[in-house]
Image (tube, rainbow, N blue to C red; front, top):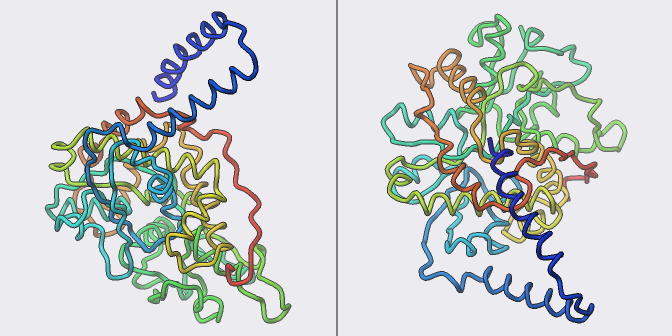
Length: 386
């Protein structure tokens, strides 16, 4: 849908460009350079936000602390994309004691970032939350074991000690176990896992939860005491939730239905600028690593560089266009939340999300919103992520 619309928007621009070239006055290179400089100055002036009659204040509550998981939003702020849309956005950091749903419900933020299942749970509990844009197109969650463990599938987890984070992060793991015919309460020994990989590294558990852009990198950034070198991917086996059909949608943008209904134009501008930020981070990952690092990240640049690369891989390619909620991916997330874990009693339909504001934001969006040619970079792993 977006591709057809994008092509319709670009075609008239191409015709205008050819007409302009055909009607050129044959000016000198100096004239052309002066014109280009004037155009750039005009662009800079427009980008400054000085053309805004008013600047609207809004806010975004992140799911966690400052890291490349949210680099697109930081870039949109730092590079003036929000200002271009006559917005001033207060980006609020999260943390272990901050729940985006509670902040948004309490009026502490207009928009929030959370996993879709969590938003569905809050909606079922009575909040009028709706997912208005789906940034991550695929799950980054995995279950990791040692390569010598003999674990190659969820069936192989039977009788083993399985680390799980809880707090809703375990839903995909529980679905994978049940699809494999295992009862999580009796067929495995579920252990509360801290948000690090120490239990696995110490072989105190047989497998551990990890996210591609964070905990998995922590494993590879750790020195193998037997070799004195960093661990390698071949030292581990990974159960990718996407490959086993139990992936759920992660970082989506949600808000109160009442808020977006009352502020449709602000919502559209917020999404457009945010999309620009993520497109910029796709094309300029190193710059976005620095932007994130300058935001006060406590992690090293090496770890952030890995994270930026893996986060981009969860977003790009965006087959339907950035921000679009794929109905099939939503249905799978809702089905798991209903069938395999006790999050919601009845599976919701399309009323729990909307692509309306995404499609409106696309209309003024320049650049490539699909990222079809995106490929992961070969990022060097650094000791301790430094």
